Image (cartoon, rainbow, N blue to C red):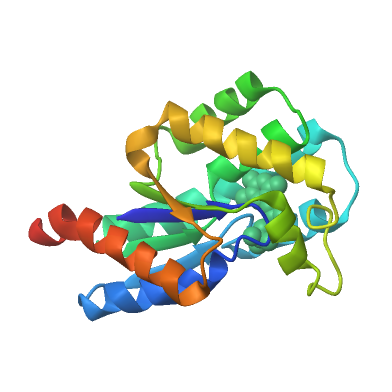
Length: 206
Ligand code: TMP
């Protein structure tokens, strides 16, 4: 099973990755915890550039998809082929949200890149941690050295959130929307509840 976690910066999604990993390990499954941009040595180098160097939105989109290509071929596909559960902190929905929504870059070009890079591969389940930009911003204040995205204003994150919603509406079956304004332990309970429900088929199939 390929599971991605998405949301605007400050939504708190990363906190719940560990709980999901523990849940799947409790089911006796190998878990691969990974992230985007990143997940391979080359993709991690591309991540550094994307997060810290100023660039044009097409360059930014090409770099995140280049990193994704490496990640899909070298980590995600082999892990899924051997039956592991892949938990990925962000995937292509983030490109549509940040480059498409936040930067206002051409959605159709992103769809074309997605087709080339992923050859139809999509997460089986995507947790979308939803939180108003103002709440997320208050949480981000704790970040000492914001990257190029974390440093953006509320209007940017409003567009990112809207683009996530647009993406969700285009593939509703894949998404589980999580109210991330609740206290962390309640959010974890929501996430594990959805996971238990959705995993039934996967676990029975083994
Ligand atoms: P993180 O803070 O969740 O690790 O994500 C790194 C940043 O990269 C985050 O601000 C979102 C951004 N990003 C994109 O702009 N496009 C992408 O395709 C991905 C995966 C992340």
